[in-house]
Amino acid sequence: MMPFSGSDYPDTPGVYLMKDASGRIIYVGKAKSLRKRLSSYFRPSADHSPKTLALLSKAHHIDMLLVSTEKEALLLEESLIKKHRPRYNIVLRDDKRSLLFRLDRRSSFPRLTMTRQVVRDGSAYFGPFSSASAARATLKLVGSIFPLRKCADRQFKNRVRPCLYHQLGQCLGPCCLPVDPARYRELVVQVEQFLSGRSRSLVRQLRRRMQQASQELRFEEAALLRDQVAAIEKTTEGQASVLRDALDRDVLAVATAGDGLGVGLLFVRGGQLLEQKTFHWPGLGNADIPEALESFLAQFYGPGRYIPGRVVLSHAGLGPELAEVLAERRGALVRLGPPRGPDERRLLDLATDLALTAHSSDARQDVAGQLERALGLPGAPRRIECVDISHLAGRGVRAGVVVFEDGAEAKPDYRAYALPGVEGSGDDYAALAQWAVRRVQSGPPWPDLLLIDGGRGQLAAVQRALNEAGAAGEFECASIAKGPSRRAGELEDRVFRPGRRNPVALKAGSPALLFLQRVRDAAHRFAIGKSRKAGRKTRLDSTLLHISGLGPALARRLWDAFGSLAAMREASAEQLAQVRGVGPALAGRIALALAGAPPEQAKP
Image 1: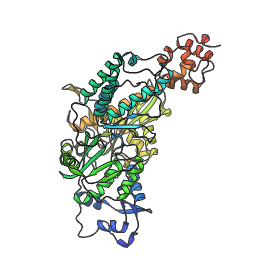
Image 2: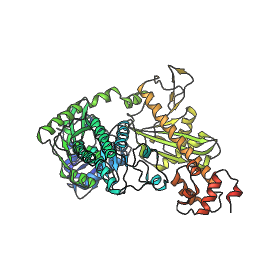
Image 3: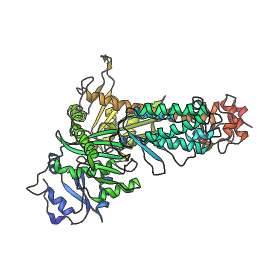
């Protein structure tokens, strides 16, 4: 344990960074008083959790960043955790934001879309949905009940006739037909009521309109309203309200679970229990709850996530700075506190029961621990990067890199590298070596495990490049290659490590090998997609840019408007002329060229 003197640290708010002997940040913390907080680590009578004891055994020195207020310390702590992803901090993944529904209220004819990002642009958001399939099913259901437009803005502006959804009665066709904006706005309000859990009120309104239409002999409209009411009632008949009000709230409980702390989180929307999540923090004890809970909430309700107006918590003692930060992100007041009334207490009990089971799935699927033991890694790999090289006959060479953190995809961290130095060679070894140098230049965060799609040769090429770049110590590497035979219908993929002649002993079908195969397959798909995109760009250039009067900027504008050469080929000259910068004459030449006319016929 490193020596400590309380007088070495100031009695002011700030953030402290514990570093190991190599200078790597292993923990980031904040404090109202750095002196008091740091002295608590080194009191002889301190009763620390196993995780804190492990942290202190590896801490070599402490750096500090001084700030003016606790709020600034909270924001700085969150930013540093996200950037450095220290080993002993609670680190959440941005890519696991739940799906939401979005209604863009700024549009004259809004459409309902799915998103994971909340933008404060006046749109209405509904959800969350942890299951993408459930969200898509709900979106399909809403689309069949409420005939809002389905097409994206680009298609909406360029359509000349209604789509199939209009013929099916699932879209009013505002792209081409004279739809009354007031009538469309009524539909939007109904969708908001339905997704907000106010279905009973909506059904009452629709029944009144149905009766009125029937009395006024507008039987076709009455029949449509009748079908709408029946569809809504069928959808909501299995939903049970858990609260008497229609407010949105999240309910979060922390409990001792297994070898650490478990978290149970319930999402209540419109008085109905919509979704639930669990988290498990191994190595933490009851004394760590306040600090862990505050760090978790600051990260979980980060910018871009939907934040309800109330969050019910099992533990009190959080400072007002957190509520202030969340209110700024939400754009409205956020209340954090204990349960109020029997309904919220009952929900908190449910969340507590959920928290007590949080460690079970971790114990069953400790893939990171299995990889640590099987590959001989210095620790369980939390961040894994996987690289694959893809090209088309040596052209459009791309290195695709996917990132997995704590077993889940971190798609915002995916990267594609163009490698012009090996263009045309088809040499995967040279491509990997060139990429390895580029990766070192990109800097941290470094992966706990770098996985290469390939065998011993690809692994050796990356190792040599990392050694030459002076960064071999930053990367634990492995490679995964297809096996020579099949057994039980599955490929016997082999995993290699530096310094080993034989593959690592990973049993076919084991969770660890299946996970590495999943990571490798994701990298393969990503790299192929980027390589094909590069090829499409080349084909776009060769097809369009020979047309007189059509330059790269205008070619890209056509591509953005229609999305593919096939769509441009099917478009009429009048539709092509609607793209900004394309006049009738140029539109005619483009139509002739795409229809297969010789180049001389496409010129003036």
